[in-house]
Image (cartoon, rainbow over all chains, first blue to last red; front, side, top):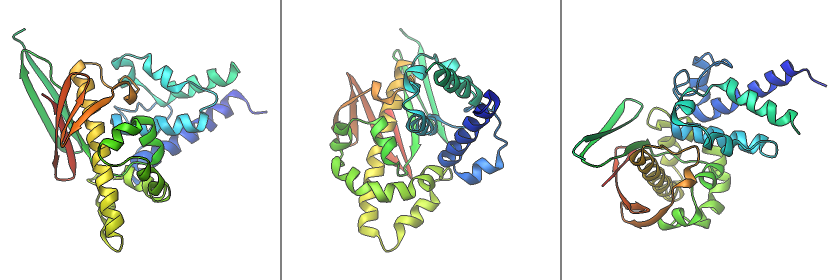
Length: 98
Length: 161
């Protein structure tokens, strides 16, 4: 059994890896990617990169989460402010409610 | 009525803008790089890719190649210099077909993005919410909005008319 903090960190590592795959590992290595990093402001990801990233998230956690539905419910300001932590919390909530 | 609408987009250091008087406008610019199969399936309807002549066949041939190149393709923030290298030598036939497929998919992406900006909504987290219903050369249509696209350097630029 893993603690919530461990599970948290495991999700973060997976998400960080996906970010590297999408923007390029060499770019990702140059950035200090933290759970608090926001996708648009801190990581400078644009919409096509965010969509590619979400596809990887969906594929990995697909059975457990309704990622598209969750994103669709957000307004543009929420999407712009979206951080890695927001996604970690969302995934954890989905996992713990199963 | 009577107000000026602006739309801006950039990729890397290149930027585009459009201004329209009295009606909304949307513009987008995106680099032409190959996308992997998962991305294409998530973003486009098969019919949209088929309009450019890249239907199921692209998926069949693209599987292995696209997977191998996907991370590099998507990572090419600086105008895909690596991508050019990949398709440059020894695989020109296949490379040019893949390049044409990447170009068409990018055209479709740009059309959806420009349409979303025209509406003032963006992609709403779901690119399939907007469906391309017609394509005539470089001119695409989503619902009743016509989007002009053009290739510029290694980019596709598209804007609502």
